[in-house]
Length: 226
Ligand SMILES: Nc1ncnc2c1ncn2[C@@H]1O[C@H](COP(=O)(O)OP(=O)(O)OP(=O)(O)O)[C@@H](O)[C@H]1O
Image 1 (cartoon, rainbow, N blue to C red):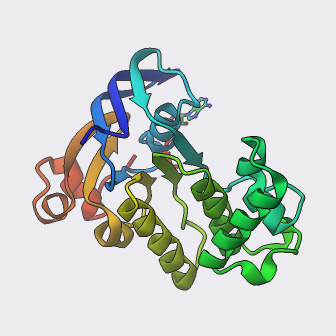
Image 2: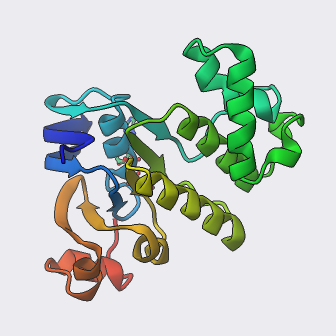
């Protein structure tokens, strides 16, 4: 099956910081976790993969990609209007867009809040809304930056279930996270970054059971400093 996302020879610099990703592919149905200490380049990589940041070298090829920042921006409109926003932007007739958005709000457990202003949502609800809005436009690849960083365990599990469902539906999911338990629960494969370099890329079980690089091992044991 052809990848939903393919990056080759990526180089991006911020002053002294250099991010280098020689090769990366994400396949339909796959959840790829991007791990690394703070400042290792996870957000920058996601933004490059999403096409929001232009690499100095290399290229990213991919089908329709959607990026979800850690704190997704919401419009000062109702929850339902926010959910429907992507569809309305794409010219879907209003009535149809709102009906589809209402259906997805139900799936993310927000149907009771549809008429409420979105800015009144809790952090967990806001992430679920942003995810609903993104899923509605049916991206081939979802790029998520620490989507559950500020969520309680119940909301975390809800978001994880949505991501698994998205992957089962054939999307490729790239997830930057500091939550190693989450990686074990969700990911099929891991890319481990350190100081902008891909130190290790491995199937999730292999990465946790026998990391090949001493820096991966130190990271998993909480001994690696940025
Ligand atoms: N717009 C920017 N301008 C200058 N430097 C930047 C910019 N964005 C990121 N950086 C630097 O690039 C490096 C990687 O940052 P990035 O946010 O990608 O790391 P990260 O792994 O996502 O970190 P964290 O886990 O803390 O979110 C850091 O040294 C950061 O200071």
